[in-house]
Length: 249
Image (cartoon, rainbow, N blue to C red):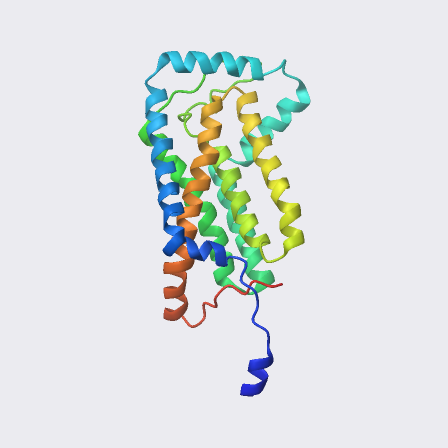
């Protein structure tokens, strides 16, 4: 391709440009706010984990939220519980990233998706180890939850994964305005359904599911600011086979 031809080829739009601005200049206050949000989630978790009065109050709210259990909603909630366990969730992330790499032939794009999901999701497990909040004591829906309550409650890992996966999908969808418009409300509904299913089973307090979503969003924002502006450009320069994201119009 000649120099004249190169000059006439229009540059492909980069819909993640606003995210790239997060790491410098006017975007830094937002990154600081996201880091503060992470700190608040951790602090609040430690506070509620040591407050029996708060847990009793949330148990009353939880009892009001949970209607009489029916076979179909029970089956859906238990299916969500099984599919979004750590091993299946990891498999879903790898499968989607592999499909993205195969479809776009863009390793950087697939890596951006996979790492955004994994980092923002698994950070919640570290917070769980720190907070150590017990599960609610309202497990009375007729099912055996002995295998479901072995871990701690705050924040909700299932909601964290649903939020992280939604953010990863939104990152992929930003190269098409119409697609992004459709995907955004679908992702919000998806996270809401997963959050309600966790309370429906009596496995999480309302603040557990809220913390799972907020933590994943904050971590994802901080990670994308670092990844898109610092790590990915360095990797792109260091490895010639790793192409920068080719965000298609």
